[in-house]
Amino acid sequence: MLRISRLTDYATVLLAALAEQPDRVQTATALAEQTHIAAPTVSKLLKQLQRAKLVTSTRGLHGGYQLARPATQISAAAILDALDGPLALTDCSMGHGNCEIEETCRVGRVWQRLNLAIRRSLYEVSLAQLAGIDSTQVRLSAFEREMKAATSRTPARS
Image 1 (cartoon, rainbow, N blue to C red):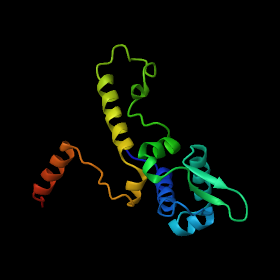
Image 2: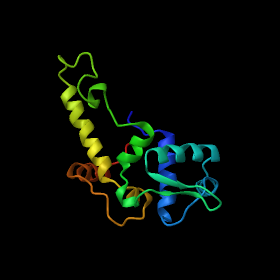
Image 3: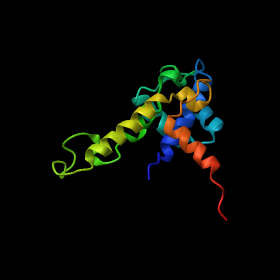
Image 4: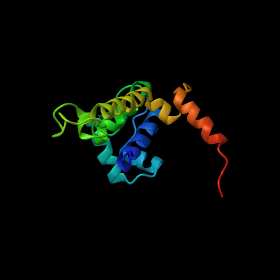
């Protein structure tokens, strides 16, 4: 199943909290209280986000964390990469040379194409959109609109 990790989900919640007040430096303790995420987890995630250059930290009495760049310039892909590494549906999705049956495989190219399509979609969604502070709608592809319409027309089975 394709699913982001709990830590990635929590990191997104922390980044969204920082995005709501981008000019304010916030401590790990304040973010833990605000988001209801355990303080040790918040500290761990903020360190990872800092290493990925998604947040900056300031030391001292009035120190804390804030976004390294505007929320509109941080993609969902960047958040996932920071916590879980690059998305790869299969070993061959990561590129050539990662699979021992690559030379004879008939499905690898399609998995690579699917992986690329998902990656593109993740790049199209910004932290500002995830946080609900960007009024720009996340665009639905024609297929997604069609699927949404089809599921809304399908009668419930008993």
